[in-house]
Image (tube, rainbow over all chains, first blue to last red; front, side, top):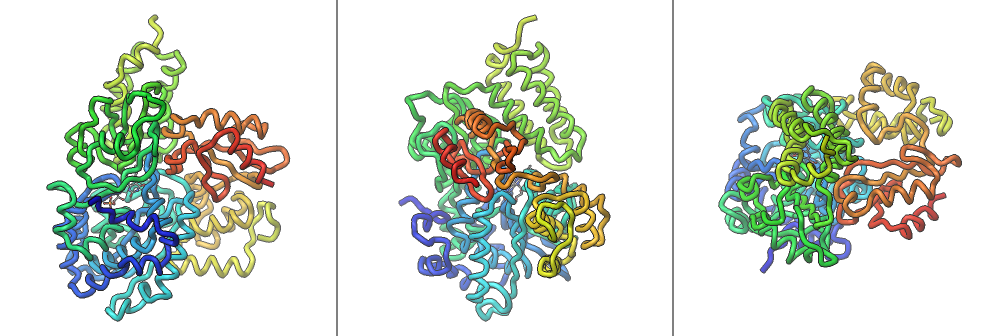
Length: 415
Length: 163
Ligand SMILES: Cc1cc2nc3c(=O)[nH]c(=O)nc-3n(C[C@H](O)[C@H](O)[C@H](O)COP(=O)(O)O)c2cc1C
């Protein structure tokens, strides 16, 4: 049977309410968790092979273990609901349709890491998700799931919802922390990692919405069961956001061992209008593009890494055979040029310059050397900046050109 | 705000109480800067330099710091905007499915360029990066709502509903 952990309640009317959540077993994981010492929960999460679903795919339990042992003073949990990676929309569904699974996951996770305050950073454009989440948090307070002495456990947790104000970079965890602190969203150098020195100078765990929504299920049904749903190196299911040229765009929760071909053709219904497939971006716009012949890959973090791309945020953008790849690159390059926060020179300068070159190529005014200049500028800057934003831009710059070079060359006038 | 849209900042006692509540939610009150700017913008329509200076005083920050924050984020408006704001996504999936056509239709219907506001002050038209609703592409945000998939007909119907 197909396991639906995160999306199992989505079809129910009022799935966002405490009543429906409890009727379907909600908050049972929390009771189990409170019966365990906090360190045992982190161990369970390690055993479950849960990996971060915000983009980087870092093992969640291992991250939690980086909080300095015996730390005196506050520790914070921060939920990354700044969903902004082009092609991704899963967190929006979780916030709107099952906010209590996030809240339960937060309580368990905060208990595990010793946090008594948790912040949820919601992107500013998400007004409806924010309203629904806010209502759920109020319900949870009223029912004694948040606040003092939760369920008589002696554990206290307060939740603060913090709204962003429009900036993709605030999805990057240290940029998010800067923004949460009331500054512009400039990322910070790591180390120190947030787990050691994060929000307000305190140890901070930043996790994605979907990652934390998995935690109650791990508690309810056990780490081994969760690990068994996935591959050897990544447990569980994840929510694939599928968009572009498919018959049924939407969110599909599937085991991470699903192949890209199955996802597109079986779940999303294939391509409309009898068109052929040209290319797919498998993990949000920062992931390297795949050609039509490269889709027999599994959609777990390591499967896509071995295929030379990345699972990222699991935003799958499907392009049919009418799509102009140079035009797609121009659109993507415009995004990175617009969203570069301007802190690091290679990123600030290259994103603008590469957009300019991509644009003139599309307009038929490209120069013979432009393609190699883009590749050169992209490669030189990769890995030289404070955060991974620029590396994310380099993914499309290089892969679009390397895999579809003839298409770019055909647009460049021969002198 | 004393006079809506006047651009000069002066929060009401109730709004100031809300500012203090927001400041108390965080270990450092400065963390409430974004929500307070949002509040000031809701009250005033946009964030003028005077509003920045006023908010800076509420936080014991320099106006330069507040300016740096306001100019960093796309959801802060530094000039009066229309009664409604339409933000059309022009990122990859929406582009593949016709965002350019949707933008062209909106420009024609409203008689403004992207970035402009209709003469009657009804609508400001923007094109923006991914709003993360690619399953309804091509799509746009109209004030608080997401709308899509867009066709000339759905766009016309939405525009009719905006007063
Ligand atoms: C440019 C950039 C944008 C990012 N945007 C997001 C985002 O919108 N949501 C998210 O959860 N993680 C995002 N991340 C990843 C975060 O930095 C961080 O790895 C993640 O929130 C950690 O949570 P996880 O381990 O549960 O995935 C982004 C990273 C980069 C470099």
